[in-house]
Image 1: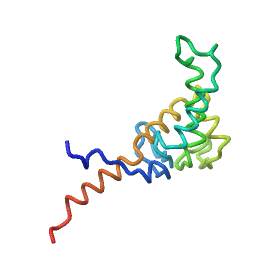
Image 2: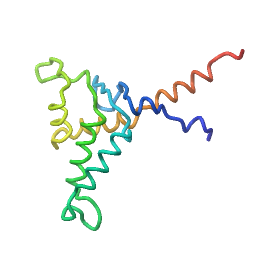
Image 3: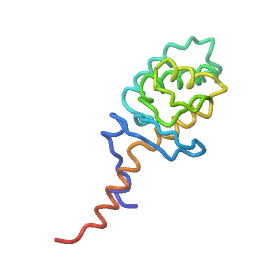
Length: 141
């Protein structure tokens, strides 16, 4: 394995980028930061530390608490915008933090949350691979 194959685009992970071609999500595109950006990790640590012992079973977080923390972190630090999301009337649905909260927390919208997680895991990866491909296609001086 080459060292260059381990590289990621750290700027995109922290600042975000548009991700499309999300499996089973049609034309939906989301602008997301990388899943483990610095703000995500800080917020996640804070929220986990705040969970009362009663909601920790054998040192592990209750699954409902895990879901709540993940949704909070995604909403606050990962999901920045979307396009290609339509209402039942076929009209575009504008991004808002309030609607994002609903889509990321309600169990019936689990597919959306999973799509955001998938997209966030792709941030920085595609560009690094594209840069490597471009470097391989350049002519020698």
